[in-house]
Length: 100
Image (cartoon, rainbow, N blue to C red; front, side, top):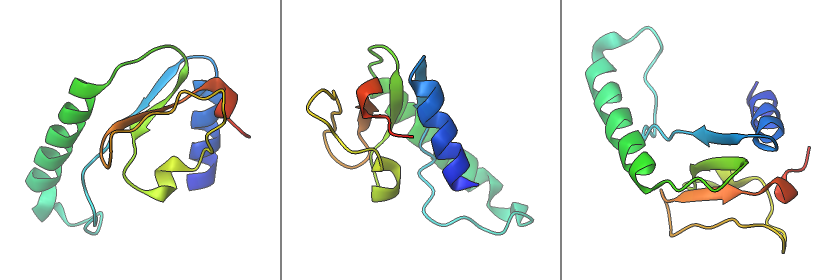
């Protein structure tokens, strides 16, 4: 499922700006455990808000937090405009980077 989502994100990002919001959640509780709901909502809201505050969209591409190798699977090319100021900072992937 993860590979299909990544493929679809990269495909649509060739045509329109596509934003993937970070959740800030490292470890997820069981889906039936609602005892953590408030913490999950608060953490995701703060994390996504900080990300959006720093986001600058400059055309089609995949805009996401660059916090783990899994989220940075698209290699940079000389034509790319990928930028990152460190973990948790916004990065972009230009259309020329998308490899399906």
